[in-house]
Length: 400
Length: 107
Image (cartoon, each protein chain N blue to C red):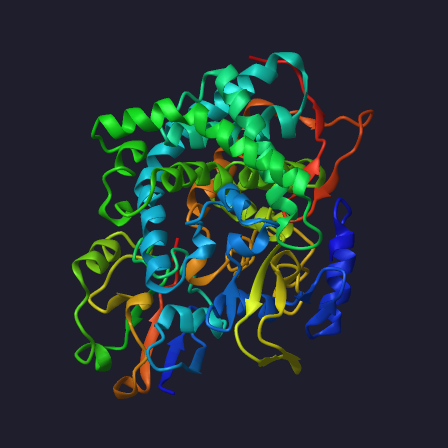
């Protein structure tokens, strides 16, 4: 699996899936499963397959700060449930409905407005990147329209994400960990005035509520800062990649744009699910086998690491007919693994879906003749834990 | 293990033996019941595990909590007197054979 970094991994996924049972990979240091049922089971059964806490994923305990001591993957049982609920409360369907027609639309239109007059753009860095990080900033009441502030924050978060991307499997690079650790302190300094203002003044905002919520009363200041960084960790690069991948699909699959135009909101909602199924950002999650057990005829020993490749399961032909095709009429189109599944499913999935919907709809509406630039470097699926199609150079008729 | 019968949106019944104490949403995900999404993981926040309990079983279930009621009011397919969130129903031996119909639409 580790050999697929920065390469298209789907042929490898097909090969592992065809094997039909967990495969031990010495170089990855883990069992690997790639069919839908096994990938799902590893994620669902948290008694048999334990989440890997940040403390296990870093070369030294000082680096736990990069993820946060109270990262959701470090919590189990009732403590996890209570914390998961906290996230869901702050990312509720009602809040998201308001952001969809307010904050998200404002951010998307602002960013499109910057590229529209130029007639060409690179969509990953100039659109899909800026949108989610600014939406998260807006959700938190941070200055999402302050370019200099956002650029500095983005830089620190990128350094953190680069380390996270490689931290759960393969070799661990201490120099990257050091840079990521430094970046957490730098990001906290940027956030500090806003968090401290939230501490001083009671309001309904997240940055005020974190200091007052009884479920967080035992958290230290440092843990609360990590919690706020967690909004970006969960919702910035992840959605950037998904939005890029969806735009890539929209620009390259023949007939799809006509289908989206004719199908309206329902077609776009289905397309968002197909984007996540075919090119979801997070390709795998690792777990630790809790006790000796058998999975698809293979004996797994307690303590072994296992990687559930959700992105492979989501192309399992046993689960999805014509799995590599975009099909806006799939009956089970939303039942994929891209956001995880079960009690630890992504709490921000609704926000991501809203950003994908608004982002892709508005690009196609405002830049109707947008097309890949045939003379520029063509997109490739890059990354490892998070996979993004880039670069996406496009041309279009300049507009307002 | 108590058995739960899920009537899927296409009318096909799927009987699953669930570990006692497991909620019906997680049981549905583990057994590939079509139409149950359970996107909030069982926190009564999303309403995407909506089922309608067979009338013969309703009286044997605990009443929904205020929190469950609040989410049921906003489910996509529309609440009926038999509506429940499957994440709030636990498989138990006295409920062996419980029948629930998956709501035709969750979003």
